[in-house]
Length: 249
Image 1: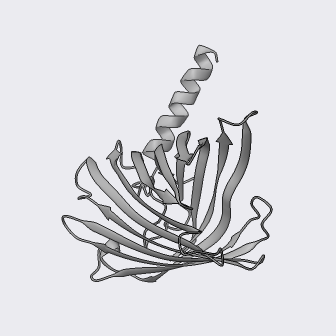
Image 2: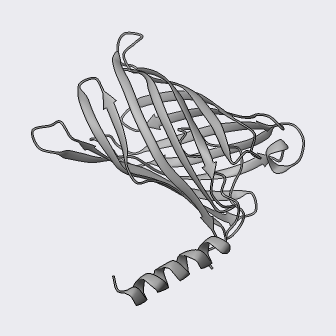
Image 3: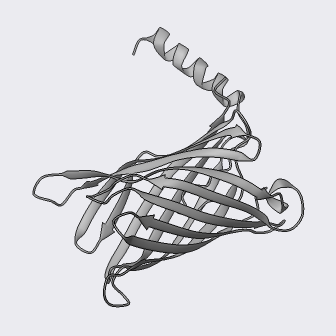
């Protein structure tokens, strides 16, 4: 890149950061919050590279992306997915996983919107095929409570695949005070795929510990480590990324 090109790139980047809204930064979690992007605003949650190990299989996750767009008051469209690259196979194998398109609606304005009580949101979406599965439907309920010292988000999700598979999950997110520039975060996650034999077949349980650092009102960085078990196998994961919120026009 020429000096002139680098100057233009930096200038454009500074302009976009200045022309932005505060970033919610709901990486590095699996769950989300009971809030939506403001109309005309975009929130990008990007994990350029991560690492995941399940049993003897090791994967590089590059990238993981969630794009949120506020298209109407109280509504946002969400497009998400990730690419898993298995690094300990005979040849590197990669798959696109967890691709979904959904619409989240804010049902009740609460403490997360500077009001009182619970904030409540509902999410309905389409799951795209993965690893030979057919299309599916995602239905989620999100409950959030914000106070001076802690913020809580409870996610209750149901994924119904048209190949006659049903998955349910629940997650609880805990965040430190938002006024801290670097705040600790945690998430407890329980998932179950039904119809797979014994109780522990299709069961996944894990805990995530990490932190979110606010760089500007528009950009936040995150780091998290998840430990747990899935399908009777030990699971470990490292996530790092950033959230960027802006007005595209």
